[in-house]
Length: 149
Length: 173
Image (cartoon, rainbow over all chains, first blue to last red; front, side):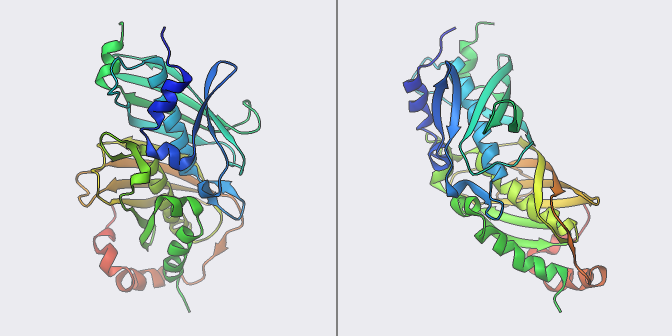
């Protein structure tokens, strides 16, 4: 299966100003595609604790899902369109501390039009996730055409 | 003597100004009432999810609905307490039109001692044409400061304080 390179995915994410606003960076850690959300004050939701904003963590995981679909289904042409969220479920498991956050997504099932994706966000340890997302995403036409099935 | 609703009208804008991420996105307080809260997100190019369409990223809508739902949860708990989002489900019905303000309305339809159940809606002026709907659970994470003068004052306040912005929201849905 062909995958996008780090530069390709980085370039694609540059078409998402929201990604820059949050400060999300794409990385490959142990060859696994991982998004990193460095800590910055603008992502704080509760300054007294302090804790990251739940909406920001949700948005971060949404980006991780979209990026994973793009990564595994490279668009043939340059005019790549992003998959769109249809319905997502977010579980908040632990407080988002004011430190660096990771997110990694897994495509659970991909059909011709819709993909089911699961995302885990963690900070200190992969085994103590701070949040999880599961959702269905509508694939852009180019992705759907790439589908072998 | 200030009633709980009056207190919430003070807390609503404070909640936004004290939340860096709400500031960063440009979320605005609109209104608060018994069990209900409304906030808005003016169009902001920094939140675009796809440069080709100019459509706002779903994550920003998520944050708007989370923020409005949080205030609705506070209103539903009948008191002031630190709260945390337990779960948030969002269904995206359509893309938000570029250059329009998104309105997020949240309704706490049930609150138990520790958990508030919220339904929320994002639209850009017409509730019949929703951008997204949400369902959320919030939990109290610290001591609750019960507000003294509650039920009586609600009726008075709902008509006085909030009549302009929330006139049609008084009905149970």
